[in-house]
Length: 226
Ligand code: ADP
Ligand code: ADP
Image (tube, rainbow, N blue to C red; front, side, top):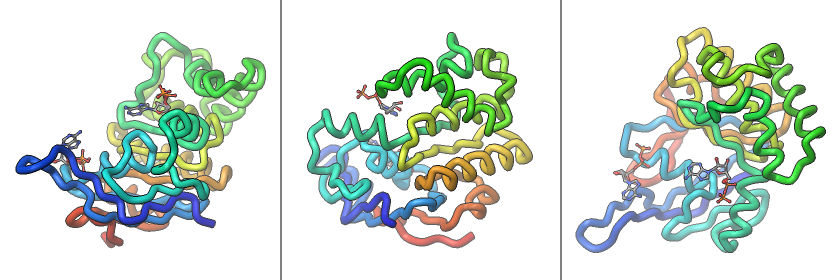
């Protein structure tokens, strides 16, 4: 079952002489339950591709289908709603809110999406528990280890049961053992929720655990083997 479908996506920044042609007709299909690793040299367009998949950026041209809707054709307001309800983001440096506890960080996106406090708290505790960090629920990010913070970030990204999780170097700052634990946790969540996931990473060990690996060559997404 197709979750995300990019067709002939072009992204050009600037114009005329100074134009930067980052994507030049990129195609990419992600099925439910699938984890894709995106591995490419710096400057190849990884962030651009993730931002387009995450509806944070509109492409210059091309189609971006998510759950059968062509997001390229939707108004900003609808794109924002799709983003809030269907897409979760995980970043390298987690971007947790420092003033809030782990559980509050996970609850927040649910409240923003219109969920009631009680249901949001319950869901947050279940997710933290599934990640093995329920005992850290009341702690602030600064009181958590890197691996714990990253697991909170993953749980937060999954809180609204998104169809698609986009992760940019989700284990970038972690040691290999912790990185394995975090990846396993992310993979469990993806499969449990029958979501899809793109992980942009420079970490080959991590990439090998994905269902498939892609890279960007001359503005197109192509299969890659390590
Ligand atoms: P990666 O994540 O693979 O390092 P990016 O997608 O961030 O690559 O960037 C690809 C290219 O596009 C780079 O040359 C970058 O400088 C350029 N670029 C990215 N965003 C913009 C922008 N908003 N305006 C102009 N150039 C940009
Ligand atoms: P808006 O403010 O446009 O209504 P939200 O703040 O609800 O949208 O954002 C929805 C999701 O998109 C959130 O998970 C947020 O972290 C993410 N997001 C929004 N803007 C950016 C951005 N520029 N870069 C990365 N993530 C972003």
